[in-house]
Amino acid sequence: MDQKAVKIGPYLTFNGRCEEALEFYKRALGAEIGMVMRYKDSPEPPPPGMLPPGSENKIMHSDFTVGGSTLMASDGECHGDIEFKGVSISLSAPDEATAQRMFSGLSEGGQVRMPLSKTFFSPSFGMVNDRFGLSWLVMVAP
Figure 1 (cartoon, rainbow, N blue to C red):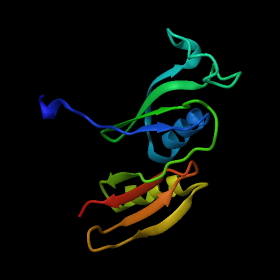
Figure 2 (cartoon, rainbow, N blue to C red):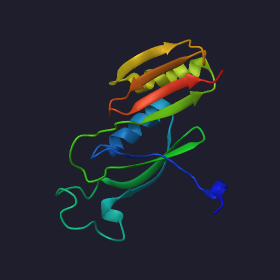
Figure 3 (tube, rainbow, N blue to C red):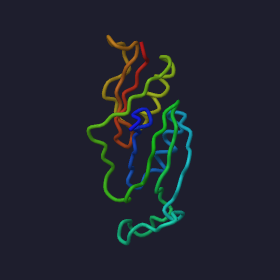
Figure 4 (cartoon, rainbow, N blue to C red):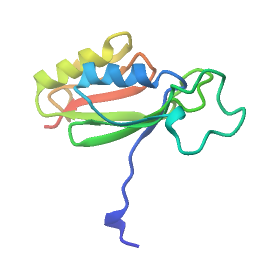
C-alpha cells in the first residue's frame, strides 16, 4: 500500500445543527463551503427510523475548507446533544492578526479555555471551545 496516498481528515457530526455550524465557520474562519447533500437528495433513503420525522432538509454530507485543509460535516442522525470529546482541531495561522481574528470568531458564543498569549513554542497560542463544543487550538507557527 502506498502510504502517501492515504489521507486522514476530520468528519464532524452536529446532530441537526450542521447548517448553522457551516455558516458559523464561514463567518468565523472564512471557510469556503463545498459540497452539501441533504437527506432528501440522497439516491438512497436512510433506513427507516434512523432520522426523526421532518429531517429531510438536514445535511447528510458536506465539506468545507479553511486555508488548505478540508473538513467534512453532517447532521448525523439529528438527535441528541453535540459531543466532541477527546479531540481538538489545530489551526495554524500565518500571523498574530489572523490568529486573533479567528480566535475571536471561534470564541463568539463559545468558551475561552486559554486566551491567546505568547508561549515557549508560539508567539501566540490559545484554546477555545466554540459554540458547538468543538475544541480549537489556535496558534501562530514560530
